[in-house]
Length: 310
Ligand SMILES: Nc1nc2c(ncn2[C@@H]2O[C@H](COP(=O)(O)OP(=O)(O)OP(=O)(O)O)[C@@H](O)[C@H]2O)c(=O)[nH]1
Ligand SMILES: [Mg+2]
Image 1 (cartoon, rainbow, N blue to C red):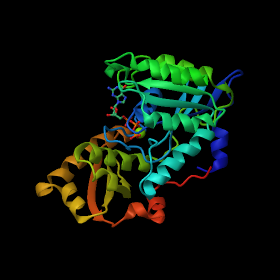
Image 2 (image 1 turned 180 degrees about the vertical axis):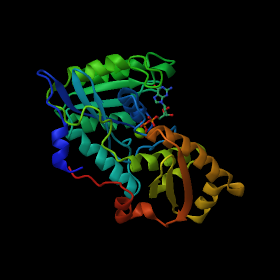
Image 3 (image 1 turned 120 degrees about the horizontal axis):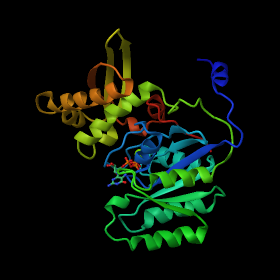
């Protein structure tokens, strides 16, 4: 669809309608993507217990009768070690300035730490309203942890919300708090759209999610998925995807004994993709070795890791 056609499909919002962009930031693994998926009501971003699951800035759109909230999910902020790490951190930082509200997420099951303070410092330079989101309330065994988080928020005039994105408690209040912080505005996207990402990108992510869940450490971060071909037939969608890794040893792990691992990844990813496209899927995966792709800006761009400028 051309850009112009897009503009005409967006209706005019009612008077006193609110809208805006909400940047979700925080350390890796605190539950940022889980929060976005919960509020949007659909799995747009993949989630896993492995830190640095999210690699790309990703938009999830929630349209209600009173507001349109565009969530910008970002990779966890941490100290960068290599080219991919630097791209991830830079992108997360620049999204702080480009949004209307920042949702700074922490894991309240653990004490406020250096990683959170590092992010709080980045936020000191912004005028954007900040909501400090205390996630994983369901896992918190020491409620006194909240004291430090409250001090942090009160000293800076931030709003606080406490919730569990996994179980849902407190999520309605979080949504209200976000809407309260939004200004009157138009629909930025058609009301029925839930993400700005093409379906192919999400398909690749759903494959990567299974690799994160089924293989150990090291391998997941060296993986880049390329959807090479999608063939839509009457009752079946055939998808051909390459899994790029950096070393032959990683290829061996991904294949597994007798091809058992790649089969398990394929079966699980296929189920997820079927949910996404609401139809039958045939999924064919192959593993390729592409040395040092993470060090290469060109490769990063090829695999869809945008280097975003401030
Ligand atoms: N118990 C509990 N687990 C949660 C909650 N929210 C998220 N998780 C889990 O925490 C892990 C990380 O969640 P993600 O949503 O991938 O975290 P993230 O902040 O997006 O992580 P990165 O993309 O790596 O920065 C997953 O295993 C989630 O299921 C919660 O409220 N309670
Ligand atoms: Mg994430």
